Structure formats: structure tokens, C-alpha cells
Length: 174
Image 1 (cartoon, rainbow, N blue to C red):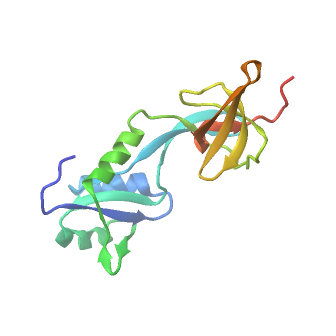
Image 2 (cartoon, rainbow, N blue to C red):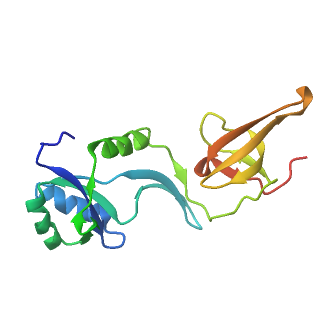
């Protein structure tokens, strides 16, 4: 997505759950836009299904001149344009590129009920390079710190793991 020097990326806030339709309407009107989507597994009582959901709910990015930006308010589904200090917020090209890189591999994220993992609880790494490892949670912030213990050799390692890659083990392992 190359940008001409006079065009900039802006943050568009959409109506609730209208991100995809709003992006389609912007496309049909010739606006360059980017809606970062992630694949997730949604579970109902009778089935599971892979769906694409917005990475940032209610937000998409539009690339245009500031003079054309006002016309976006007339598009169905657009709620507002993000402003900072009274001016339209501009997103740097590098930030859009970083979002694209983040979502490049289309990692599946299972949607599950929020559960707090407390210090000392057993967790399993369910994604990423450490997938399958069972460890002890030692700290929770945005991500978790877990201890991977090798009792037989008397060593342990502390690793930072993203929240989306960790699941609390409900049943104790025998």
C-alpha cells in the first residue's frame, strides 16, 4: 500500500460491528483503506467456526487527503474520525506496515471466556514455539511470565508468553 506524499492514514471509528461493511463501502467509493482482521475460532453450543474479526473493534484506517476526509462522514457505518488535540489523528505508514506484519501469518486466536491466571497456577502454552509446554505462572500483566522447570537437572527458566498463547490447566496433571 504505497502512499502519495499528500495522502495520510487516518483512524475511522465505525458503528458497532460494522467494520467490514464500512470498509466495503469505502472500497466502492475509491478510498484506500485497511481493516486489520484476525482469524479466530468462535464456538457455539453445537459447532465451532473460523471467522475473521477486527483486530481493533470499531476501527479501520483510511488513506486520503485531509480535504477528502470530511466526505467520509457521509458514508453509512462511519461514526467518527479520531482527533487528537483538535486535529485529525495521523497514523504513520510504519505503523500500518507493522500491523500488516503482525497479522501476516494469520495466527488463529481462540475466543474464550476471560479467565484470570493467578500466580502459582499451572498453565499450558497452546501456540507459538513453546507450544505444549506446561509451566507455572509467576506474573501477570499484559503478558504472562512463566517458569519452565526441569527438576531432574535442577534448572528453571523464566519466559514471557503472550496471553493469547497461554491457557490455564483446569485439571491437575497426575
